Image (cartoon, rainbow, N blue to C red):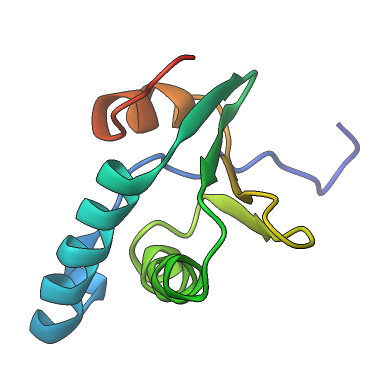
Length: 112
């Protein structure tokens, strides 16, 4: 590390107080959707890739969850990928060291 540089470790913890009461309720509903409606979960080195059936409803729910999740868990890197036709919607969630363990405690990981 050169002079004047420093390494700042971003904490791996979610802060639900970053959400309003209404946002927290909605986040809870959307998290329930995320946990119950996914069709496959792939373990990655630093997180997970989660598949969902391709539908406008699922895309809308996932997109709204991502917006709220970024407010309370800013350390996460979340990507949302849609394919053509009936290809699944892919959500990739990664982050710094410790992220995978946090996600494992929250997400119902289904291996197929």
